[in-house]
Image (cartoon, rainbow, N blue to C red):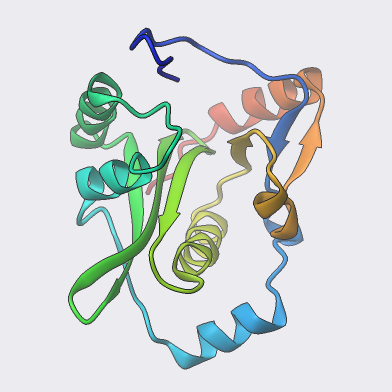
Length: 171
C-alpha cells in the first residue's frame, strides 16, 4: 500500500481477512438487485479505469506508482477487474491479483446502488467455477463483514495460501 509520502509498503496483517465462498452473504435487497439484472457484468475490459475509480476517495493508498504497477500486472494476466456497467457507464467494480488458486482482492468502488456487491457476487461465482481456494480481502471492514468476510490467523492464512498456490487455476 502507498503511504501519504508516496512510499509503498508491504503489509501482512494478523489476523487476515478472507471470504470463504460458501459464506458469501447475499442480503434480500441484493438478491432483488441481482434478479433485476440492471448491471452488465464484464471482466478485464476497463482495468485501469476501475483502479483509478477505486482511488478516488478521501483517503487512499492508491497512487500513480501503484496504478502503474498493477496495470503492468494486468498486462501480464495476473491482475483482473470485475466491472458493473449500466447504460454504457462504469458504475462499479473491483480488482485484485490471481495467482494459482488464490485471489487477492485489493479494492472496490460503487457509484450506483449495489454495483460493487453485484461485482463481488460475480467474482465469487467465477472463482468457484474455476477452482480457486483462497479469496483474500486482507483487512475486514464493517461493509465486508456484512458480506461474510471473516478473519483467520496469519498461520492459518499461510497454510491456505500454500495450498492455493499449488493449483493452476485459469482466470
